[in-house]
Image (cartoon, rainbow, N blue to C red; front, side):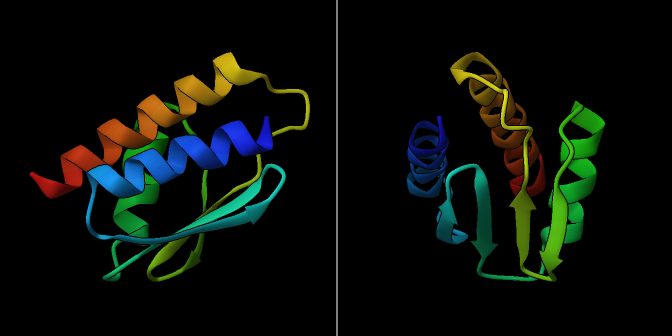
Length: 89
């Protein structure tokens, strides 16, 4: 599930050029941005029902429960995609 999650985040990195790095181990994953938008990403994700942590002004961290499956990962990726799209616009 961790590699599935990271692969999905890498796909979002290809879509959004302001994502500069995706890194992690297992399900503990961070996404880094080219500017200090982490607080905006965090709030947009919370509005969509996804809990993330602001790691730095330009990075957020995901720490989902270890019992999630690919379906929940897909839901999280969809929320993150919509959150990032709302920030771009």
